[in-house]
Structures are given as structure tokens and as C-alpha cells.
Amino acid sequence: MRRHEISDEQWDKVKDLLPGKPGDPGRTAQDNRNFLNAVLWIAKTGAPWRDLPERFGSWNSVFQRFNRWAKRGVWARLWDAWKDPDLECLMLDSTVIRAHQHAAGALKKGATKRSGVRGADSAASCTWPSMPRGTRWN
Image 1 (tube, rainbow, N blue to C red):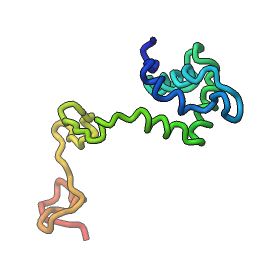
Image 2 (image 1 turned 180 degrees about the vertical axis):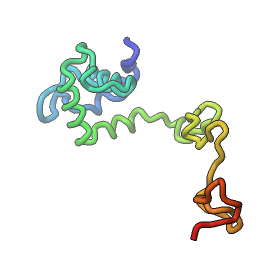
Image 3 (image 1 turned 60 degrees about the horizontal axis):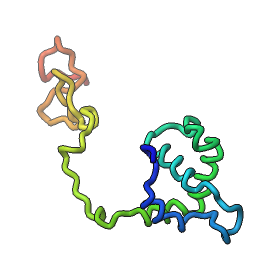
């Protein structure tokens, strides 16, 4: 089993939920597991569809099948089957989840944070530095 592929246990849980079984309308799928592994490879690596390895088949065929399954709700059924009941209530510790410093609104070194609301006793922002404090343009 390769790195981004589903285990035999996971496959046994979902194989009967997939379209293309004998007796289903349309074509019988010979490679549902390979297709599922291709979609998981895309999801886990974040790569574009065109970069899908050749062992999974044509990237366009995989994408078209993925799109058809999405429209038919197959992915929702799979998600429900794979859902781990122990994860319904999940608590995350913020020491594990890090945000980039810009995402937190951190100030640049030496900069002061400006508020959008000015107090009544503060100087206007358009006051020239050479003018005495409190002098305003009218």
C-alpha cells in the first residue's frame, strides 16, 4: 500500500456504497479503488488535477468521474461512512494550531496601531508636523 492510498479496512467500509457495482445502471466499474486513491492523492497533496500520476489513469477522466460523483452525492455517502464517531466532539489546543503573524494582526516593528475612531481631544490626522499641536485646517 502506498502513502496516499486507503487501507483494506477502509475499502471494505465503502466499496458497497460506490456506483458501478454489477446490477447498477450504466457501466460496471473495474477500478473504483484506484479512482478513490487518485482522488485522495489529489486531496492530500493539494496538486492540480493535471499533475495526477499516470498510475491513476488520465487526469481528465479521473476529474470527470469525480465531478459526476459529486453531482450525484456519492462523496456525501462516503463521508458519512468514513466519519469517526469518536471525533464528533473534538477539542483543539491553540498551541497546536498556529496562525501566520500577519493573520493575527501583529504590528510591524516600531509601528503604532491606528484606530479608525479618533478621540475628541486628539489632533487631526492631516496636521502638518511643523504646525503647533491643536491647529487644524478648516
